[in-house]
Structures are given as C-alpha cells and as structure tokens.
Image 1 (cartoon, rainbow, N blue to C red):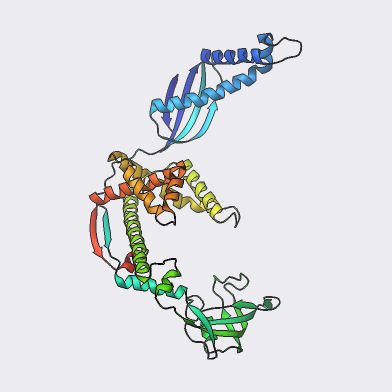
Image 2 (cartoon, helix red, strand yellow):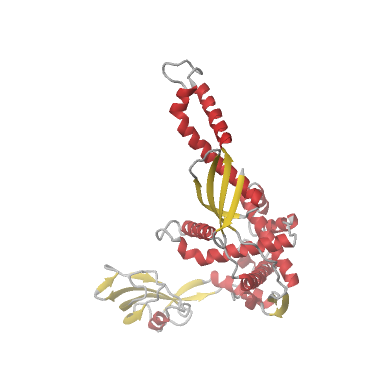
Length: 427
C-alpha cells in the first residue's frame, strides 16, 4: 500500500492510497468461490455452479463490496501510519482503475496541532466563604414561607396579601377570554414583572370591582395577553393574609425530620455547605475556562466537529423540550458548540501534557456526592455502578476537576473573602 498526503487547507488533508490490484482480485476470487459453494441455481447441483456463471451473475456486486471494504480498512491503516488525528472524513472516492493498482482518494479534517498549554498567566479570584448561623436562619425562614397558611380578611389588600380575583381583558376589540373570566391569585409585592397589577389590587376588598388599563408582561401565561396593553375588568373574590408556622418539632416533621428542630438546622447547614462547595467549584471552573479561552481562543477547529457538536446540542435541547417548538437548528448552537469543543481539546491536551489520569478515588467521591442527595444512597450507587454510560459521565467530571485543580496550582490565584450569598451569585 502506498500513501501520500497533501494539505488542502488549515485543517484539511487529501490522502491518496494505492492498493495492488492482485490483492483486490484475490479477495474478489475468494468471495466468488464462497458464493459458488452457497448459491442455489436452477439446473445446477449445489456447489457445482461453474465459476464463470457465478462471476457473470455476481462479479460486479462482489467487486463493489470488496472495493468499499478495502477503502474503509486501508483508510484506517493509512491514518494510523500517518499518525493523523482525524476529526472526520468529508470525501471517500475510488479513482479510475489503472493497471497494477487500485487507487482511492479521501479528504479528511484533522484536529489542530496543540500548543504547550501555559496557564501561569491566568488570574483567578477564589471565593472564601462559610455558612453562618444567619444563613441557616434565612433558609429556615424560606421553609416557613413555603408552609405558610392563608385566611380571609375583610380589610383592603396590602403588601404580602394574596388576592384571589377574576378578570377579563379587551385587546384591540378582542375579549380575553372570549367567555367568562380568568382566575389569578397574585401575592402583592411578590412579582417584579407585573407591579402594575399589584398597584391595581392594593386597597381592594372582597367583592370590589375595578376597571384599569394594564400592560401584561411578556412572560404572562396567556399568550393572547403577553406583552399587550389592555382594558382589564377586575373582580376581587377574596383577600387573604398569611401566617407562618412556629419553628418547632412539628414544623421539622413537615420535612420528614422526626428528631426535632436541632436536626433540621443541622440538615439545613449541611445542605447549604454542599451548595456553597458546588458554587465555589463552579466559579473556579468558570474562571479557568475563561482564562483558557482568552489565551487560546484562536485555536482552529474542524468544521465537521463543530457541526456534529452543534447538532448534538440541538437534539439534546429538543429532547428536554419534549419535542415541542419545532425542529431546532444546529446553527443556533454553533457558538456554544465551538466553545465546548475548544475547551474539550484544551482540557484534554493539558491533561496529556501534565500526565493527569482519572483518579478512581475522585470518581468514588463524586459518586458518593451524587448519591447523598437521594433518599437511598446505596441504591443510587448500585445503579451508577451497573451503567457504563453514567460511570463515563462521572469519570469525565472527575477528570475535569483534576485538570481544574492542576491549573489552579499553576495560575495566579487570589483569595477573596465574601458572604455565603455573594459566593452563590452568578458572575
């Protein structure tokens, strides 16, 4: 086999491969002889069909199959010999047969030659935060609000009250809904997007009616009204005030904790610490990836790999949407796909250059971390251990963490003290 490679672009290569004709003929003859023993033709005993009849009937089909298989197998051999990191094959065609050899041409896209990944100049802010008693108090307060009870009042609606009301709106001469009314139950002061509704309801009592002009937010659940300005007829059915439960043992039991309030606070503390740890980890990973992209953002990428990544992202989003919203275009995800692909190459190359391999103990720790969030951790661990795909995902996450840790050891890291809430904020 003879192989030649030429550059036809930054990451494009044209490979020409020659295979001796006698090798092709030998394979064709072998296949035809196999067929001779297997085929059943009228007028001939099994296994006694003349080879010239077999060749006349099946020769071209067998030759085409042999040539196709030869191109596939020899292409892989040639790629290995040339030590190419192939991203995709964009063209694979046989050439007109010449005396003595069979020749085919393959056009390939290859991954870029990776530079030495230097991270010493990356500047990273590392949050230093702890979960304070006040943070636990805030979360307990949130839990109380989730369990609040409501009761009717005769007074006018105030901030914090829930108003049960019915309305009908008119937009450009069209009534919404066409018949009857639509029910709403806003808590006054809770919505940042629809403050005008809060203002309209404030002061109204059960049984009151009011007509106002309102501009509905774009996120309003009724698409006929979202973003529209309408004349709205409101009728208040009830005004309700809330009361919060006491933080006692009965309150703890509401969350499945029979040991009492102290155990509830301990569980809340542990959950917040887990959340803080994840938030700090996410911040550090984001800083590392931003630093790598800033330093190596001009790294060329094969177009076929970008397209494949974008298509995969579009398919995943389609599945998450339950198939709704029509067919998503891969072009919508091209920029994200380039970023993900570039980061994958940079992380992988840094791991290779620094001889970082997957740490089984890190994988076990990740698995325990995932399982801890479920009611039956041992069952979750068993499910993961028996699913190769899930374990591959965990191993990739563990390796990413190892790479981030290694980069943090070399980069310019500055610690910054901040509150729990600040550490959780998205940057």
